[in-house]
Image (cartoon, rainbow, N blue to C red; front, side, top):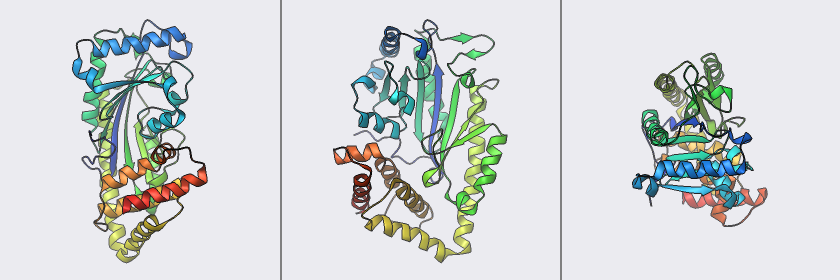
Length: 342
């Protein structure tokens, strides 16, 4: 089975969990999705597949079309939890679809807010790789489809905040030391002044559970795609340096107390019979930190990444093979984590 990006470790993955680049594109010939007819929406799905697969057998082999009208609610939720599609696409009443690659690095959302949202994800700090992959897919489609484009403004999108390059570049950061020391407030303020957005684990309007923060650009107009990628990379490396220094300071300041915190979380996860999502993410954040600092030696980052995904409600119910109410989910979550920690 092909390894998935969200289980792999990548460069600087002690801090950077993942890198993501997303391009918004619209077909010149059709109205934006919310103003288009059901017939138009189906044509957009068909034309996207034709543009990608004609003369590209490798892409046809690698990408699978998923139609959301054929999915059960849990299947939709699993795709959201894997960051492969947005919550908006999963809940949409339009004719929607997604082309997803076998390694789940590529996800092309069709008929979300825009006709296409071309998204590429990688483990660790690999924004250049994600950008190159997105560009390759974009170029393949552009050879056969005319995009909505203005010579002075750039790519036209449903939301004005995406007009221009229509690129969204983001990195998912695990920042327990910045959070513990309270320096996270200054970090959030600085990002706001630099025109960057900081969100939680699942993007806009979500909490930073498990000390996970998603850093992304807000401005897409007046800067080149490369400038935006380079800007997020540069700020990302500064954050990596700060977080690593603070982790060492915390360990040096009171090693016994620090190790006690890590090992308490280890014990709670290994023996709990009930675990809420929030507590599990908090404890897994400590475990991830303990692995990175060499305190925990019988687990890997990949183990933690896999658990962070599989304790989410959709994946958990898929693991159980049935629908679960919140109380049952807390019990099954604890059971899953115990089994995983062995």
